Every structure is written in structure tokens, then in C-alpha cells.
Length: 618
Image (cartoon, rainbow, N blue to C red):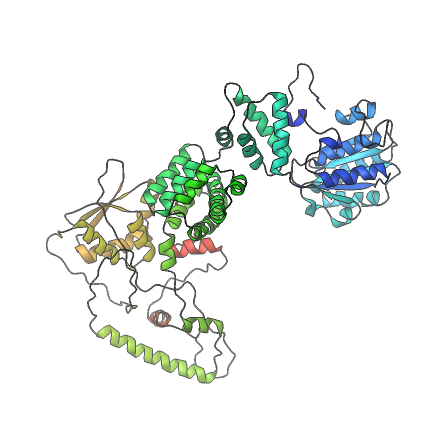
């Protein structure tokens, strides 16, 4: 029913609010149940309407009250003209009382409500209390209402509405007839929006209506509010899908397609520049990542489906763009699923981060190197797997054997330190990762060979040699992937970065110190480095670098459970591999900074802390 007066403007969601059961969209089961209750005169004393926002809970409560108190009622089709119907429509009158539990949630408010229950209805047959957001009532208020709900006065009806039924105490729920309001389907929303658009003469395309319905989470009120907002833009030209996307801040297909293409090419610099362009258009990191998750989901659906018409309806992506996705050889389903998994993990951190921009850039760096990261993951050998699956029970006898094995390993380690190290010729081969045996721990300061006055030669080869001597794997990948070689002259390296965030990371101790150590090994004590910001006019030396990884460390160590024993042998955890044994020997001679326990953080946080050698300050 149209509520608009002659000179009054009403928002569309108020103007077209349902006034009878036939106007309620997408809640057929609930409408049928309430209509039959009226026809059969089986009216309960308490109802609980629950479901997402904007699905018709409060509107259905008003219609139900109107049907019960209509002068022709109880009737499924109220007349809309009598005093009782008009009072409900205008939210006035004394027989139908609406209460907002968010502002009237205390025990005093509950007592006042109980006093009102005692009064008989004045115009209609029932005195009806509609309590909206009932989950906001305090525990004391709920308990005060229990007796009234159990044995209410004659002709008193309670209708409770809530979006969070799990917060309503069970003793109240058990005294109500519960009706769950479902999210309204996209097709039902589009159909209703088209009817209203034609009545209001709003010039809007069907694609734009689908875009509205797709972004309101099944709520009719939200969709009408968005249509009302978009109608202002349709005075001069037709409202299109792109208009709606700009209005809600959603990123377009072309922007996300180009970003994904550069990520799959491993072009970190261009990918970060694309993200900065997205920020310039007004999107924040959270909004960007939400849009990107939906986009990756749509691509995966397209690559796994053979029916273009069906997948076009599911994703709202045109057939031309679907063909564009399928023709791109870089778009592989398995790789995109890995990227989607990483993006979801980073999104959990971005939502709560104090500086989400840095996390978004780290996400881009991470997913651009997703193939490399999977290749350098620790490999589980059959021996290691067996050790993890079968815990070792340490007895007094086995401890003696372990001690003998430790002494033997110590002798082997000393021989390895004395023996001359073989010279390994380092070769740079594309897409090759070389693993080397773990080198013994250096107990004396590293002696660097002093070169002649200056190093000369191919800057790309010199830079490759330096990177391959960087001991820290996170630092090695950071400088090879993010850093841009600009010049090597007079034993000084000039390295560029695309933005200030990357420049700040380059100057951090956990990355700068390993790099300087490698530079002094290659260029001597006079070696130096300078960090600058790259511009469009900066000349960059083209380098194709595949860094070499030596001594990859597993993420977790297995230690056998300890057994109580009376033997005097010193109790030590059972160590499975040579690297762990060397670490234990080092602890006996040199004190180390205790490691932080990351086990209680999320998986993404642990990966970031371990990959970038980080520490939790606060």
C-alpha cells in the first residue's frame, strides 16, 4: 500500500513496505503457516521471528497483528481502512505496542511491560506486543518475563523478532512458536525491484538490478535502499551494472583480471603498482581483498564449468569475459585454488591489522611467489615420516646408546671442520633450486678475502653471486624478488624499490645484516649498498636470478616423549637429524637468545614470523 502523502518524500523501503501477507517476498512457508493459524483460529500466545536483517520479520509481525485486530477479523486479508488497521500502519494506537529491546533492555523496562499486559485491549480483540531485537534484553529482564510468557492473560500475544536467536535464553524460546525467515533469493529480489522500478520510472538495466541483488546478502530492505540511492543517478542516463559497482565501491572485472594476470606472471613490481591504483580509486585493503576473494571464486567456477549460461548467472560475468578467462593460459585451476587459500588466510589478518596496507602488499608478494614457496617447503622423507608417526620411548638403555651416538656425531663434526671444504662451482640456471648439505657451524669470525682495489665485471653476475651468499632465506627472496638492481660501481651497489613500504623492509636488521655480510664476502670490507626509490625514469639492470637454497630448515621438530627413569644418565630429548644435533652442541658452548613460542598464533601469522624472521614485540 502506498503511504506517500502529497508533499512528503518517503524512502522506497518505507514506501513499499509490505502491508499484507501477499506483499511479503520470499517467505512462503512462514506466510502459509501464519495464514492457516488465522483461518483455523489456532493463535498462540508467543511467537519468535528470527532471521537475517531486511527479510520481513517486523513487517510480518505487523501484518499478523493487523489481521488479528481488523474489524473484519481475524482475517488473512485485513481491510486496511478500519481504526485498528490504520493504527498498525501508522505505528500508533494502544492495542499493538512495538518495543525496541535495544533501548529498553533492563529489568525496570520488563516490569513496566508486565504492568501493561494487565490492561485489556481497547479497539481490537487482542493486545499485541512486538519486541524487536529481543536478544538485547538483559538476563534479569528475560527472567522477569518468564512467568508472563508461560501464563499470559487472555487475549495477550507476544511477537519477538531477532537476528540472533542463539542469544535468547532457552526458557523463552521453548515458550514460543519459532519461525525462521530465510534470505530472499536473487531472482525474487530482482523481480520485486523491476516492479518498483517500472512504477517509479527508474531507468535501470536488468544487469544493474542483478548487481544490486547480488550485493545485499538476501535482504529486501537493503536492496530497496540501494535502488533508491541509484535512482538519483538515473536522471540523465541509464543506470548500468558499472554504475552500481562504482556506487558500492566494487572493483571492476578488468582491474582484477589484469592484477591476477601480473600475479600469475610473478611480476611483483607491476602487481603492487596495480594495487596502489586500486587504493587511489578509494578502496581500502579490506574492501580490495573481499572483492578479490569473490573474483577468484568466480574464476574457479568458470574454469570448472562447461555450461556458460549457467556459470554466467552464478558469477554475473558476461560471456565475453568468460571466454577471455578461458583463453588465458596462465589461469590454471589448481594454482588459483592455492592463491585463493593464501588470500583467505591473509584476509583474516588484514581485518584486524593496525596497518592493513602492509599486510596486503605482503599478500601480493606471497602469492606472486607461490610456486617458489611450494618448491622450497621441507620435504618429508620416509625416515622423518616414520619418526613423526611412531614416537620413540626412551629407556635407560636407549639413553646410553643415544649418548654414544652423540659422541660419534661430535667426532664427525670435528673432522668436517678440519677437513678442507670442496669448492662448488655455482651456476645460475633458470627455474632451478639447488640444495646443499648443511655446513658446520662457524665458531670463529668469518675471514673475508680482500679483493683488489675494486671489483669489475658484469653487474648481474656480481649481484647473483652476492645473493647466493646471503644466508637468510627470507632476505634472499626479498632482495631477489622485490629489489631492483640499478648500478654497481666502485664496490658500491645501488638497489631500488617501488615504494616506501618495501624500502623500510629493506633497511630492517633481519634483512639488511645478512645482505651486508654477503656483500663483504664478495666485494670486501669496502663493499657498500645504497637503497633508493624507483621511478618511471629509473634505468634498471635486467637480471634473471634463481637463488640457490642451502640447508632448508623444517618448520617443526619432533621430540620423543620422556619416560620416568631412575638411571643417573642425563635426560635429553631424542634428536632425529644432524642439524638438530648441531644446534644442541652449539647450545652447550654458546648461549643463544631463547626462541619465541608461536604455536598459539594462527597459521598465517606463524608463516609470516618464520619467513621474515620476525619477533612479537607486544
